[in-house]
Length: 175
Image (cartoon, rainbow, N blue to C red; front, side):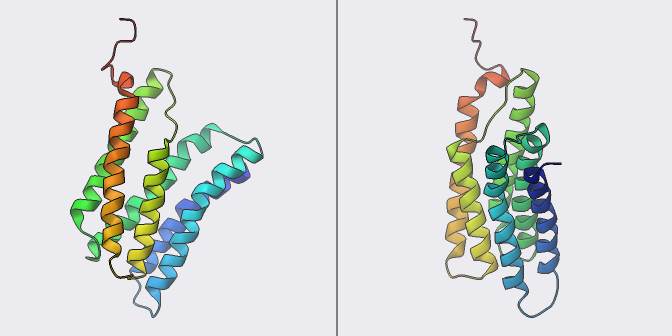
């Protein structure tokens, strides 16, 4: 397995460790969980960089990098919502967008199309990571960053739907 794939797998492991720590009743748990979450978030860019620079772009990486992002973000948000630290509507909007894009990627794949991450999608992920880290660190007004992330989540979802509407058969390119 390539270095980039190991980094991607590490992100999933770190996500599980992060949310596990959030359930512990230990001093400094929020800081520890936030540090692990931030490290996991940094691996999002690091695995892609490693794959490109080492010319090790793989099918595993193309599939599991977005999956690892979803595990990190959604799992952490669900735990934070269960701990009553983030509102469920924000979590559901983010989950629904991710499900929608996963379905879109599935249909696109059946048509031989590969849907790469857009600048909107990358910005959305970055802001989600920042918002979640701020919430775990209990920074004042951090929920405003979460709602900004929700807005970017909606915008990126609409952008994907518009750009890849042909994958759903909405546009007949033969006409």
